Image (cartoon, rainbow, N blue to C red):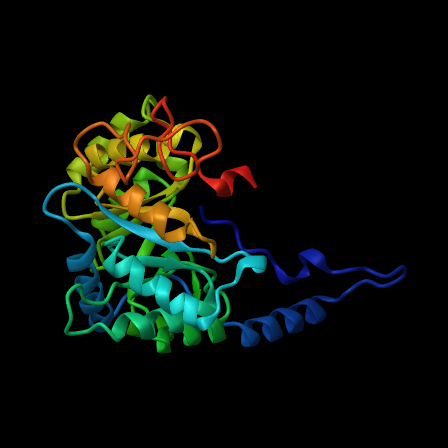
Length: 315
């Protein structure tokens, strides 16, 4: 959602007996303008659109939805460089993820480097997507020069000119805050790109949510759109599996498992389980290993009721 830009003097503290003159206010406004120049609406260059096309080939499946995973390390579970390298490799080989998403700037370049080491192999490198803050030009420069495949930006919001210039060298995924924004993006006179991240405000909260029909209708009328939806991992009763399959039926092109990898021993086991279950056409009532689980404290296998419990949720 676009927020009205605040004037610099909204937070001005007026001392007793002091009244700022118009010239004082104008001078302050000029200094602020010089300090931070923004561009009204970022227009991707052809080089950015070309990189976006490469990303689309990785996350757009002929049928169903691809599955990406988020790496969001917890402060007390930060992986070493060696462990992060192993995780990156396992997400490609074992989990067969479609992409890795992260807002952790420190890890981005390391993930890109490991994935690039598999170029020419099968499976090849996964796209690395940065979806953290892009307000700081230094951060944007770090992730772009680090080799990310794409960066998420809020559609319709102005950008600092330096940031906009840096983003010309990377694919742009637009985060849209409403269904109307999707229509606006697709009918724009200029080619803005057609890969979008759906805000959670426009996603159904569950499979019975009545907003599902409206979303399905919008995606059906914008068939060229590659739409992405984030779903929380390790939901109660493994609800993320039902919800993910539901979103795929509505026409969502790709799913992202939020907090799937946090730097603990369940990162890969959970991701393999979730991706396998989301890709299954059958019921998700069995565990990924085919073992019979129980309710006596075992984690990562299904209980008698079919639910797979995770140690991470019990901590």
